Structures are given as structure tokens and as C-alpha cells.
Image 1 (cartoon, rainbow, N blue to C red):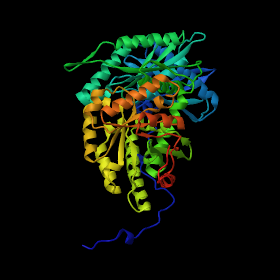
Image 2 (tube, rainbow, N blue to C red):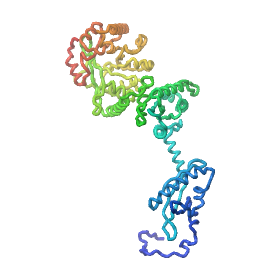
Image 3 (cartoon, rainbow, N blue to C red):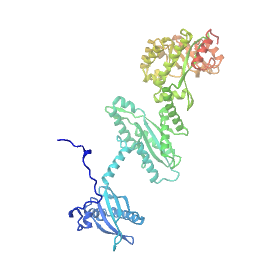
Image 4 (tube, helix red, strand yellow):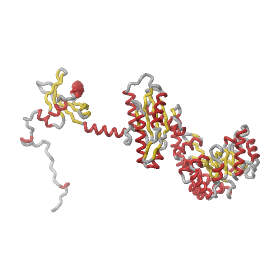
Length: 584
């Protein structure tokens, strides 16, 4: 059988006149208007209006059941009838051909919703203008929408409002509650301090159980009208009306502390819940609630560091915003090579010889300008950027030594000190980092000194000891920075493979005027000698200080008296200029 293409079939042009159908193709004139209305699946009626009175002409059974039947809830039916009449009269007066609107009524099982339409029928002689009205039950759809909205605005674990729902609850309270004169509102932010430890040690199920229990206890501390929400993973917030200002807020804080004071049982363990609390108060009811919430969150961050309840102060939010800007810009700077190292000379106090340099990170940002190290390093530690920052500093310091050697034609008799953050020591494989830095640069381990603080050792002594042993395996010297400001004792110094003690500048800079400081410096020098350790004094600003430390037998010093931190090229020139050694 041959196939025929559709394109090849003959096509005849159709006539413009429609063909007449048979008699059975026309509607039967005998069907009445009520019959037509009865066939419609929705509520339907035809009515007229004369002298502001609405008269029902025809209505199907569904319309009668929904709009006319009297029930036990006659008050609800009357309210709906009044609302319906107002909307219909408004349409009639408007002169529009059609309109649509939604009606709500209280049913036996809850709210019911109807989507209504109304249109004008063609006018006829001998009767007033008539209107066709239909209504479709949308209760099921609205219930689904309501449930979905509830899920979007609430926390699935605790059933509390989430961050978005919290904002809507606050707006509702401010708009629809009676507020006395001079009343204000406050936000109390709560951060569970040890939540991550529970998750790590006991698992996420235990963490969820902890959150549920904490939510119940916090809810028990609320007053009528207060709103509790879970606005983050382990962050809660309370909206409170404050008739007496700060005293009301502190009273709520005290109730929170009491609610969380007793331990929570998880499995076979009893966990004590520690939390950081920050408060922010509105100046008046016109304040933006979102702004007050942000202020409370800024206060709770300070509370996490201070260990006390913090009340938001002017400027704190700007500080938090600046820290966020620093974090964002620092992340870009690390990725794009926007940081540099400056090198401050280390001087042998007996001979004036340059024995090495301390590498110090410097950052001059296009948008932020010069950012002090104390500021961006604190942000790096808080955000986790300290790990890539520390790795960059170690690699760059080792490469600088390699470049100096190449420029001089042979290895320089100097080394570079690199600072280690306690957080970097806890999170990074520091030994592997230094091993790679040495291997990539081709320099010996004895020329790269690791500086760490007392706090880094105290935080985890066993881990610190293993790290120091690994660094000694790379032949790296170890220096304890800021010695005298922490809690090190003779036993810890004796058991750790430390080579150098660095006396903190707070003792050195004023030791000529402060007898007690001078005694502390002499004591540290004596201790170091008994332990066969060398000592570096920081903060030498004058020649008198340098001479005094030289006479005390201090090995090495650094400070502005000798030189400020300088770029890599200037540091090399500084060393070469003093290569023949100078007296101090």
C-alpha cells in the first residue's frame, strides 16, 4: 500500500457560510432558566434590584443551601449575607459589566471561602435589569494555602515561628495590640553556646531533642503577649512589650536563666545548657523591628565573647557591619593576593647583628583602606579564614627567604619567624603546612621559627605537644610569644620542646619607670637561663631600653628603636646595610 504525504492531499477552500445543522442541533426552547441554573456545578442565582432592594429571581439548590438556609450559626449567615449585599450593591452602582470578589464565612468546621462572580444580563422590556451571580467553594484551596504558609513561617522542629514568621508576628503585635503611652518593645536574642558539641558527640537526634527541650523551657518563661521564635540553628529570639524599659527586659532575662539553670537529660547524660544573651530596645514603636532584631544579634555576639548579658549600645551594629565587610573583603584578598608580609628585624642585643625577621601580615584594601592586623586577624579567627591566612603567611615567608638567598647568591645567615593562631593550630594540619612551605622553597627548617602563644598550648596541651614535636622533627625552632601574659608554669615549660621565650611588650616598654615590671623581666631572664632557653624582648622603643636589656643579658630584641616592619625588598636592603654588624 502506497503511503501518501499529508502535504499532497487535495485541499478545498471552505465556504464562509456555516452549514445548517439538523433540528436537534438547536437548544430546546422549553428548558427553563431554573433548569439552566441547576445544571451549573457552582452556586448560581439571578436577581434584580429596585429601590436599593435586591430580589431573588431564580437560584439553584446550592445557592439556597449556602446563602439562604438558616442554621445553628444564624449569626455567621447574617454576617455573610450583609457582606454579600454590600458587594453586590457596590457592583450595581459602579456601572461595570462584571466583577469578582471573595467572601468568607464561619462554618461548623472552620472558615469557608467562596470566589464570587457577578455580571449584568441583557435588558428586556417589561422587567428590571437582572444580574447573574455565581460562587465557587474555594475552602479546600485556601486551607492548603494556609497550611503551606504556616510551614513557610514556622520551624518544623519546635513549631515556633522562624525568622520570617517572627517578623510577621511582631508586625501583627505592633499593629493590633493596645500599647500604653511611652511603651516600647525589646528583642532578646539567645545563642546556645555548646550546641555544636552536643551534635558532634551525641549526634543530630540528641541535638534536636536538646532544641525541643530548650524551646519548651523558654516558652515557659514568657509573659502573655511575648513571642518566642527560633531564628537560626541554635539561635532563639523573644519579642517582648516593655512597659518599664530595661528593667522589664532584665526581668525576662532572669526568668530565662532560671528556666535553663537545671541540666537537660539526653540519653544517659545530663547536659547543662549555657547560652549567650543579648538585648536590644526600641526607642519608640515606630522603630523598624528588623533593625532591632539585628541589634540584638549584634549584642549576643559580644555576649559570646564577654560571657555576660549584653545590652546593645550605639555603634555596635556598625561594628558588626564593618566586621562583615572585612570578612567579605578578606576572603577576596586571600583569593586574589591582596595581602602582603612586612618584616621587622630581630637584633642580637650583644653584637647588633640581625639574626632574623618576624613576618607580620599587612592589608591595604581598595574599599576599606588600611585595616589593622588586630582587626582583620580577629575577624579571620571568628570566620575560619585564619587557616588560609596562616598557610599563605607560612608559604610567603619561606618564599621570601628563598628569594633573598637567590638575590644574595648564597643562603643568608637569617631566618623568619611566623606566627601561629591557636584556632589555626586546632583546625589545620600545621606540621604538614610547614613541611610543604620548606619543601616548596628549598630552605632548611632551622631558618623558619614558629611563634605560638601560651593560650594555644593551654587550650589543648596534648595536641600542642604533638605538634611541637612534629615541628622539631622538621628542625624548626619554637618560640613562645607574649610570655608572661598567660598561665604557663615551670613544669609546662620544662616538658615542652620550646627554644625561645618572647617577653611581651607590656613588660618591656615601661620597665625603666616601673620597678615591678623590671623585676618581672629579670625573673623571666633568670628562668630562661635555668631552662637553657633564649629570650627575645619585644617593644624596645628607645636606646636606653636596649642598653638595659643588653646589660641584663637578654639575647635578642625587636622594636621601633631598631626598625619598623618593612616590605620584603627594604628588609633585604636593611640586612645588607648592617651586614658588618653594628653596636646598639
